[in-house]
Length: 92
Image (tube, rainbow, N blue to C red; front, side, top):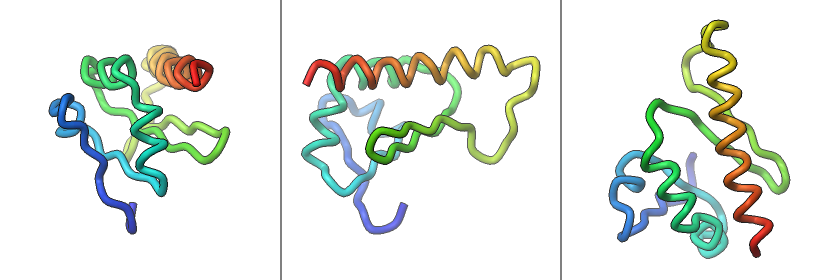
């Protein structure tokens, strides 16, 4: 979280308001966050955290455990998020 500035998207102020997006290569991050990805996250409800490092994506909730009765919904939500990134990276 330290060392990089928040990357905002002027055309997507709701995304920029709701999400903290940081990384060492701002140009690559902007290229990855296509309009489809930005729209997907803008319409989401609830909170998830996503971190990446090369070919690894981690999806988690911050500061709380997922209730066992909500686990299936969390896995579905996490899978959707991962798949939208996979689709975007396959289009490069």
